[in-house]
Length: 276
Image (cartoon, rainbow, N blue to C red; front, side):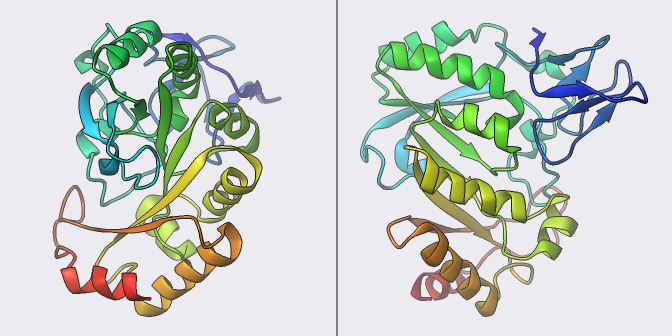
C-alpha cells in the first residue's frame, strides 16, 4: 500500500531529492532511496509501506530498552521494512534489509493498531524492528490514532533524520530510545554507512527541545567501538550534553549479518563500560 510521501523537492536536473534524512537520495523516475521504501513515482515521492507491517509482538517496555518509561508495563511492538542506515552488524537485518515487500501484512491501519493495543492493555505502541524515521508519515498517523485511544507511543531509532521531519515525528512520540552506534565518525562511515554528527544533533534536540522521554543505547562490538577511551568519551558526552539523568544502556553484540567473524561481547566488557 502506497501513500504520498513528504519532505522532498525537485532538482534543476530533473531528479527528485528526498529531504527526510542526511542521505539526501536523488532519484530518477521509479528509483527508490537507500531505505528502499521511499520511491519516486512521476514528480512525487511515495511511501510504499504505509499500512503494512513486518509483524507484531507484545513485549515488556524494558525490552526496547526503556527502564524509566512506565516500567512494568507492556508495549505493542511493530515495524515495517527497510532502513536508512547500512549497519554491517544489524541484528534485525531480515527486516531492515528486506527487499520483498509482499511479505508485509496489509491489515495494519493506524486505527487497527491503536485498537489492538487497547485490547491487549498495552500502555504504549513501539515503532521498532526497523527505524520509524523512514516511515515517518505512517508513524505519525499511528501515533495520532494511539493518542486518541489513550495509548502512548515509543520510537526506537538511530536518530538519522533532518531537522524538519525530526520535529514533526518526535512531536508525536512520548518516548524514544536512540541507538548511538559508536562515538567516532570513522565507525559510522565504515560500519553504518552514515555519519555521527546528525545523530548527536538529534539527541540534543530530543532532550532539550521536546517533551519526549529519552534513553540511549550503545551496542558494544569487540574491537570496533568498545575501547575504554571511546566508551569514556561517549559517556562524558551524554552527561555534559544531555545531562546526568538521561539513561545510557550498554548492550551485547552477537555475530550476525555481515559481522559473523566478530566474537560476541563478553560480560566483562559490559561491566567495565557500566563502571566508567
